[in-house]
Length: 204
Image (cartoon, rainbow, N blue to C red):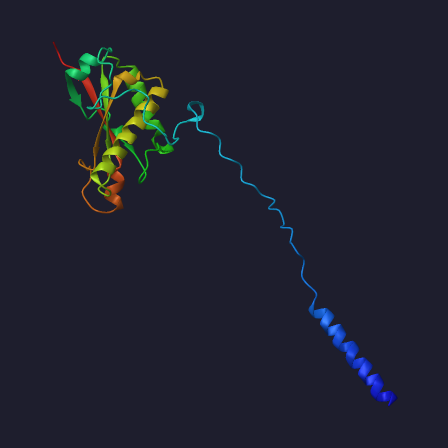
């Protein structure tokens, strides 16, 4: 009798213990481990920190006419722009090339633009036309817009080097004037470019 009572007590105790164990809950909330690294916020884009090679968020502030000429047609280069000889050979070695879908001037092109700026500041009777071009990919509308951004980026860069922006006019040909035939990167890399055409006064 005593043995069966003891067994019954032990059985009830074990059942109670298991029941209590089944009611144990996990923590109500877990405190997350903080991330020790927080990337710094990018600096705001202003006119003062747009250095050479920076992506230009907006075209040149100089107002453009529909033809791509400066609105100030009374400036010192207006007669040259209106009536000129074209020289595409003198500054041909300084053609500027761009990456895909980009109007950002690459560091490899800085030296070329310094040479163009030096030439213009020493030939103040001449003007310059910057011609923006793209490779064959993309729509006509997209490439005309991208070509314009490339030409305006170069004009702004030259203005930052001391060239009077009124001495420079811009035009975009989009993908209409490829410099190299072909349908691969070897050709495309030569077609993403800005060409320079020197505008010299015609003899009276």
